[in-house]
Each structure stands twice: as C-alpha cells, then as structure tokens.
Image (tube, rainbow, N blue to C red):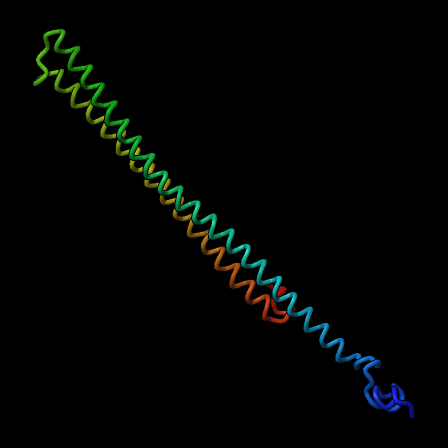
Length: 167
C-alpha cells in the first residue's frame, strides 16, 4: 500500500475517501432541505411584502380621513361666510328700501336664509362624516388583508404543499 493510499484511503477498500462521492440519498436530502428552506423563505417574504403594501394603503386611508376632516371644516366655514354675506346683502337692500328688518317679510327672508345656510352646513357635515367613515372602512379592510397575508404566508410556508393548495 502506498503512502497516499494510507493517507487518503482508496475508493475501493470500502472506506470513505475524501475523493469519493457522498451517499446520493444524503445529497438529495440536503438539496431537498435547502429547497424547502428557500420555498419557506420566499413565501414568508412575499407575504410580508403583501402585508406591508396593505398597511401602507391603510395608512394612506388614515391620512385621507384627516384631510377630509380639514377640508370639511373649510367648506363649512365657506358656507357659513356665504350665508352671512347673503344675509348682510339682504339687510342692506331692505334698509335702503326703508323696510324694518325686525318683523314682517324681511324677518321671514332672513330666517329662511339662515335655515338654508344651516341645512347646507348639515348636509356638508353629513357628507364629510360619510366620506371619513368610508375611508375608515377601507383602512380597516386593508389592515385585515395585510394580516391575512401574513397568516396565509405563515401557513403556506410551514404546511405541506398539498394542504396549502386550497388556500
């Protein structure tokens, strides 16, 4: 036996040589494990990305609610100012004509103008509340979808493929 044969062994002596190939089933098992890990990782990453997208969209809807509240307050102020302006113009017109504003037709006109302004304010507030409520519903739906993405990714990553195909 040569020195190299003693040092490294020979592939034909039944021993494991550093030059001999490992058992093929061991290689296949290692490769399957790597592929399973890669599938699990990519599934979890994809679920995480979908979840991040959902949480981001929910945050955008939260901002929409805040913007809607500010815009509604501005519209309400505009309606109030317009109503006051109309009532002022009416008062000037009646005063120029010598009509008493404290009673009669002039008082009825002022009351009707105020009611119309208040009705417009009420409609604006109701519409704004509905727009904010819908933005809140959309935000909740996006958050729910994000959480479902995380849960689905977790289940898909850890359950055998045949169980996940129905998800």
